[in-house]
Length: 515
Image (cartoon, rainbow, N blue to C red; front, side):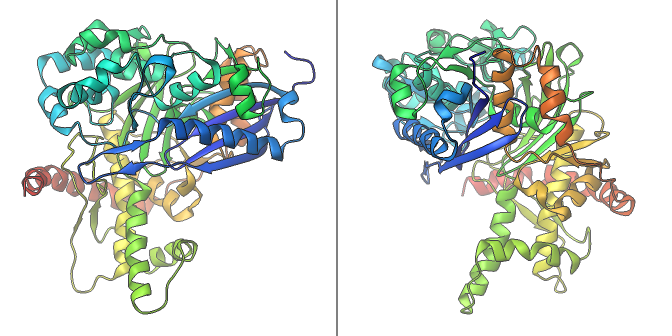
């Protein structure tokens, strides 16, 4: 280790915000700098962002961190980077972007997914990747680009994910990590690319676009002179390529401590994960979900992902805000959020059913249907807005149960992270919906911490990830909050109706999508 270096920097470039976080070598958070992320959406389902701008924003965020931490450059032992997952960021000659980066919200590949999904070739691909094909993924997006804009694909030299693009700008190295490489094009058992998976997508001729796979907890590359000038850090500082943000966040939040556990990330999307060994993985018959490698030998996360989680709450709050504004009493977001617990107290549990498929990209877990849309069932004249708000939050709980049911038995303990995990009302609903005690980590920036933990191991601060987890993660876990037995029993009775309605609505969604 470099003498006098006592800081690890974790970069977490999310969909909404790019953050750079300074930690001491024992995992204590010292400072945070952030920059809003920027992306564009269109009515045709496109969602993309300017790749050069994203790197500029990342560099600016690191410079801002330097303004908050005295002598940051000299004190930094290593840097690690994670970012939003999925998407397709094509890079050509001179390491320049070929086009804008397609992000995970992009839904343009919907017809391509319909064509490829569920075939014998897709079933063979699923056996290797453990991941259901959906519109978010690089494989389906490149396949769609070949049909619609082949010149873009032909101009590319490498296909990267967002964190890989930032790593390229930091180090000059074209690479990806085992988590994203394997759930898109590989085999989670071997942590290598799979000919079967690539062939099922019809991308044999594009195999040259796939970069080398490296594990940032074992391998680092030095910060380049150019990146040093742009970021304010020292050239030669070791940089680790983190796993995808979902994995880093779960790692930092406690998916693996003294034993594997379940972890739910409640953010814009909902990620429901359980850690286990790759050898014990049992894939479902519906070709849904993800399998993501963890930065521990032989360990994976089984995952089902809701396309929208707190986006549903945002929608309900927007309804309330618009109504208040129409009467000349506008409310800011913080005021509306502060009302949630009151609305929950004014409403009756389990009175309505809400399916939280509010995303315009539909749903991907525990089923894949780009036409899926949110629904509210059971309304009568006696229901008011507090009942709607409760139904939305209970819908998040029942969707979490739906996702865990697709992975087997309900969790025995649920670790929660994400901004919404701070809500006692939401924790109570989630715990009761899955029938398990909940624990919340006091760590504020779990994604950046998970990335920084990889750098800590790669640079010899800890001999292995398990030892790092014991220092960085376990002490931050709060006490277990037991599930409310009455709510647990109620949601167990409501769940069959929730699932029956979800299945019955599929032809309705399909019909609406053709109008």
